[in-house]
Image 1: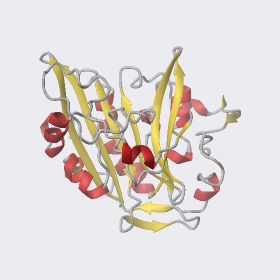
Image 2: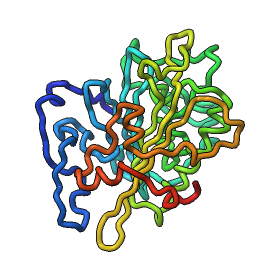
Image 3: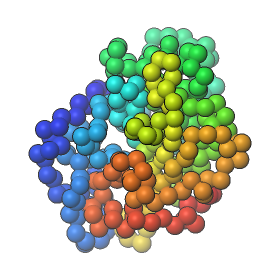
Length: 306
C-alpha cells in the first residue's frame, strides 16, 4: 500500500502510443494505436480502470491485499489533500474480487489493523500522511454520512479488502437519505453485474463525487466539500465470438433525495458525456479504435436490470 506520486514531468514528456494490459490482444487484427494512454512508467497507470493522469491529478494511492498467497490490487484513489476529498476511486470486479467470503456484519469483535472493532472499522487512511488526510473528527457533527465510494459491498472477497473500504480517503460526505436509499440502489446494480461471470470477464469501475468549482453543493464545518453530483463510469469486457468485446455506460447523479425509489435509467449517460461533465478522461488505456465507439454511446438494454 504505497503512495503513487504523480510527476508532471512524466505526464508532459512521455508520449506512449501503445495499448495497455492484455486488451490489445482482443482477437482482432486492428490498429492498437492509443493517443491518450497513460505513461506506463507510473505504477498501475496502464490499468484499464485508471482514468487519464493529467495536470488535475492529485496524489495517487493504491491499496493492496494478500489473497490466497497473491498480492491483489484492491482499489486506487486520486486524493486531493487541499480539498480533503478524492477526485475518483477506481477498481475492478473479476472472479477473484467478486467473491463474498466476508460479511460487513462480521466486524463486531474482530481484530484488524491493531484494533478490536465494535462495529465498522472507519479510520484515517494509514498511507496518507497526517495533515494531508481526513480524520474521524472531520465528519463528527457534519450532518452528513461517511458515504463509501468503493462500497463496502463492492469488496467482500476478504476481511482485508473490506476493511480498506472504510478508509476515510474512500469516503465522501453524503446526505443520509441519498446514501442509504438512493445511491445504494445503483451500487447494488453494479454489484449484480460485477458478480455475474456470465455478464463480464472484467468489470472496470470508476466512482467519484465532484470537487470542481461550481460542482460543490456545500462545505462541512471542517472544510470538506460536499459534492453536488456523483458519478460512475463502467466498462465491461467479455470474451465472445473469438475476441474481447467491450461496452460502457456512465451515470451522473445529482446529490439530493429521490425518496428511495430512483429511476436508475434517468441517470445513465454515455462516457463521452460523463467526461464533458467531470473533466475526467475515462478508460484512456483502451486502443483508440475501441475507446472511440465504446464511449460515444451506450445500449441501455445490454445492461440487464436497468
